[in-house]
Image 1: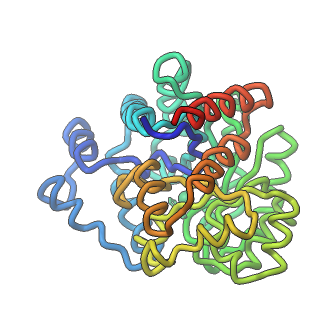
Image 2: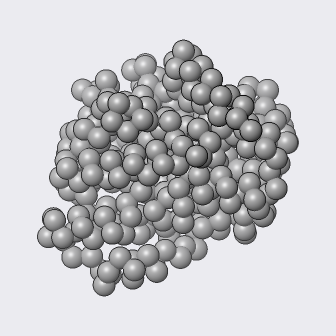
Image 3: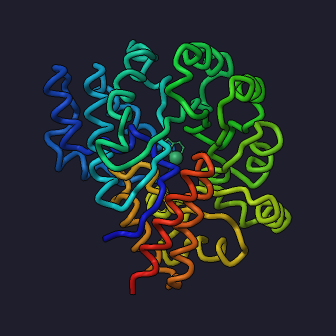
Length: 329
Ligand code: ADE
Ligand code: ZN
């Protein structure tokens, strides 16, 4: 039985497996420019973040109706439970859908249908985080937040994703300020391909409570000291970093150094359908490649609950379950 854990960095659109993509394409009468699921999977060789994003956005064409989003999220919940995930804070990219004429309401209703009562139905508590696309305008982000205002009961926070370099966080200061006023948590991708300065800006200008990826923080010892002192969680995604060539191979991944530096690092899958594995595979393969100790693996699981946006009582209950799991020899 895999170790109990929370997953805090997971793009629901990045869980679209080739087989489901073809099934939805058929259902919606859409032609995909690939012969079959195998041919599609063979195209998952990426040079960098942008080359992945190009395919990621292209394949979203198959997501059109409310039911498509429900099917997508339910497929993820089934896989995540088998991976020991007890709690998931799930990203979605509404602008990638509204730009194609799929209404914001359709996306949120479809995802919410899967996530409502997820703890009873799948054994996983869930929260939904709306991500703004940083390569789109601040006005577009604000319009998206306006659309979200009627659905605040279904959201726990906002995030920032898509092409990082050339799109520093400060552009979204106003929209993140508004999100905070609305009572939403704030996270941001930073230091994935972009420099440590973007991590600082996400903290100082956006008020980010967690940093997604953040691996390039390791280039800046003052920033590392700050992340440790302020206990800012970093949602690290090892397979993603290797597949998008931010890191040469798993054995070179900075995760172990991050833990040794006392950072609140967690392991996550990012876009598991594209990067070769879900969260437990990320954890196992990275632990093996970096020779992580049992204590370091337990710390990663503990960090995942502590870094979540759960209330303290629920966090404690999950941490107690983790302790019980670890107590069994
Ligand atoms: N959107 C989906 N996956 C992403 C990633 N790894 N970085 C930035 N934006 C993303
Ligand atoms: Zn991501």
